[in-house]
Image (cartoon, rainbow, N blue to C red):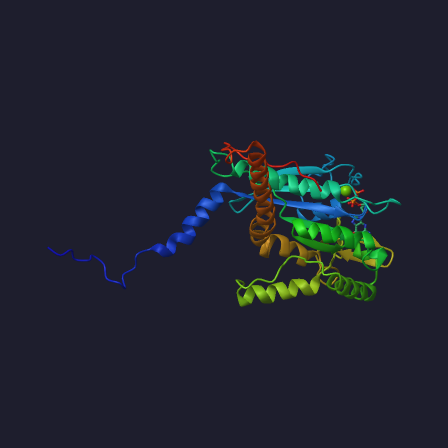
Length: 330
Ligand SMILES: Nc1nc2c(ncn2[C@@H]2O[C@H](COP(=O)(O)OP(=O)(O)OP(=O)(O)O)[C@@H](O)[C@H]2O)c(=O)[nH]1
Ligand SMILES: [Mg+2]
C-alpha cells in the first residue's frame, strides 16, 4: 500500500511563523545589555548615560534627581536596572568607571577596566563549562564601551591611543567627543576629521567591523556610522521651555543647545546607533568575536597546563570534572 501525501509541495506549511515563535521566546527571556563608560574625569560620562536613558536610570552614586549635580565617580560601579518598552524587557547594566588621564602619571590606568571586562568573560566561561549548564546564563559580558575624548585636547593624546589599543582587543569601542558645546561647529568638524585620521593611522580597530555577512543595507548604515565617529555629543538632563517648546539642553550666553536636535550635536545619532539599530549586533559581536577569542585562549591554556601536569607526574592526562579558569591578569 502506498502512502498518499496529504499536502502538495506548494501547500502552505507554516514555518514562516518561526520568526514570531522566536520573538515570543525572546520577549519572554528578556535581553541583557551591558555598557561601560571610560575616559577622563569630568568629561560627562555619567551625564551622557543619564541623557541617553532619560528618566530610566539613577546613577551609580545613588543620585536620583536630574537637578542634582552628578558626583565624581570614584570606583568601578555596575548599576543594573530592568526597563521595559512595548513588552520588551531590557536588563541594562551601566558600568561607570572613575575618570583618568588627569594625573601626572597615568601608567596602567586602564588595568582595572580591562580586568573588569575579562572577569565578566571568565565568569561566563566558568558557568558555560559547568557539567550542568544553566538554561540561560546571566550575561554580564560588556557589549559596548563608550570612550570619552576631551574636545579641549583637539586630537588623540598618547594615553588615548594606548587605552584605545588595549580596549579594542577585548570590547566593542565607540569613541565620543564629549562636551561638544565647548567648541564651535567649525572647530568640531576639524577636530573630528583629525581624530578620524589619527584613529586610522594608529590602526585602532573600532566597532562596527567589516563583515562579509552584512547585507547592503547594513554596509550602508555602517558607512554612515563610520562617517560620524567620533560622535560629537552634548549631555544634559536639564529640561526647560523656550519659545513655547520644551527642550533638553544647555543654556549658554551665546545661545541654547538642544541635545535632541541633529543640527546641534550627534546625540540622537549615537542613541539610535546604540539602542535602535545596533544593540543586538553589539551583543552578538561580543559573543562571536571578543568572548570567543577569550574562550579559545583560556581553553588552550587549560589544555597546556593539564598536559604539563600529566608530563610532570608521568601519567596520562587526568580527567577533571571541571577545568579551572585562570585568574585574570592584565
Ligand atoms: N558644557 C557641558 N557640560 C557638561 C556636559 N556633560 C556634562 N557636563 C558637566 O560636566 C560636569 C562633569 O560631568 P560628569 O557627568 O560628572 O562627568 P564624569 O565624566 O562622569 O566625571 P567623573 O565621574 O569624575 O569621571 C558636570 O558639571 C556636568 O553637568 C556637556 O555635554 N557639556
Ligand atoms: Mg562619573
